[in-house]
Amino acid sequence: MNKIVVGLLFGLILGAIDGATAWFYPETHSVIGGILVGSSIKGMLVGLLSGWFARRVESTRWGVVVGAGLGLLFAFLVAAMQKEHYLEIMLPGFVTGAIIGFLTQRTGTRVPVKT
Amino acid sequence: MDVSDSILDHLRHVAALPDLTGTRYELESEIGRGGLGVVYAARDRQLDRRVALKVLDSALAGEAQLIARLEHPAIVPIYETGTLPDGRAFYAMKLVAGARLDRYAAGPHSLGERLRVVRRVGEALAFAHTRGVIHRDLKPQNVMVGEFGEVYVMDWGVEAVAGTPAFRAPDARMDARSDIYALGALLESVLPANAPPALRAIGAKAMQADPAARYPDAAALLVDIGRFQDGLAVEAWSEPAWHRLRRFGSRNAVLLWLLAAYAGVKLLLFFLRNI
Image 1 (cartoon, one colour):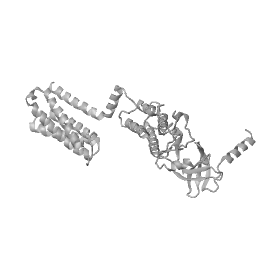
Image 2 (cartoon, each protein chain N blue to C red; image 1 turned 90 degrees about the vertical axis):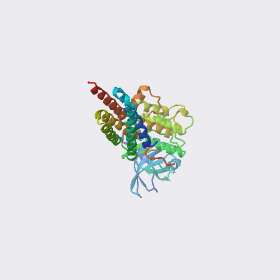
Image 3 (cartoon, rainbow over the protein chains, first blue to last red; image 1 turned 45 degrees about the horizontal axis):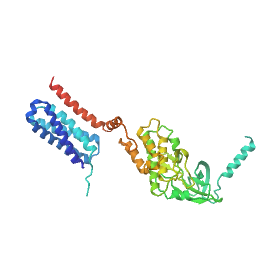
Image 4 (cartoon, each protein chain N blue to C red; image 1 turned 180 degrees about the vertical axis):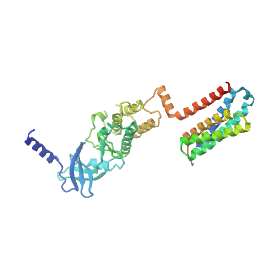
């Protein structure tokens, strides 16, 4: 499986898990569906770009740095759209991005298989 | 020992030295005694370089032809074969400056370095086996580690060599799996006292009395060593659960730290919200 697909999958799963943790805040119960979808899409975008980066650069350290940076950027955009909860969205987004960056470096194939 | 005894000893020694008349080599000193012959340091007058000269106890030149067939970076190359005036066969080979593996292993080398040497020996064996050649007498004394870290397997056996007891498989008929046994014994001999159990298990599997219970070939043993070095489970050892957990932890330390950081961030945010 190539790294972009791996990034998309991990991004989807980790993004959904990150979104699901909003359930611990009662005021989000009415909008939890939207949070789950938005967080999953955010994770997939981070995964897509991290996977693309991992195909070009083989470095776990840089993978984590780039993933964390992308996670922080997309989390900031989401928080900016809501104009609140910057810390609650950006801090977990930053770490989730780092995890996605790490996983795209460690798993998946670098070069697409030619048939 | 009186004077006449020492003169007699000297004469015996001189008489035992090979007569290199008619060859391009000039004898320097004896450097070792291997299976079926004596190895000397000599100078090649024609090319003005030092070589190792093995003079065989008989006219058998099969050993040289055997090794000459094996062109591999970890097998000492043969330069020339010939016959001495007294009928004994000899062959000239690269003179490796370095240490025998038994002496090298006594030094303060890391586990990784020791495994590197064993892997090079295993690669040479695997190559020779694909050419239908078995070593028959693999032991640390037959492996040289050069000044630049290069590894050479020497003294490739001929039919008459039966192996050295501590490294000899209890097989009725010597074959490639007998070499696997010797490679396992060689691995055991270079491991430090506190070697991980996975490596001990690899050595033990290679040294099973039943040849069928050993690794099928040298490459399989090397794969298992490689798995150990990559932090993976080895075929030779069914590790206990706590060991598997610890190996997983050390192999995935970065991921575990990141997951812990995520959990820490979530807990911190939850805590901040409720104070």
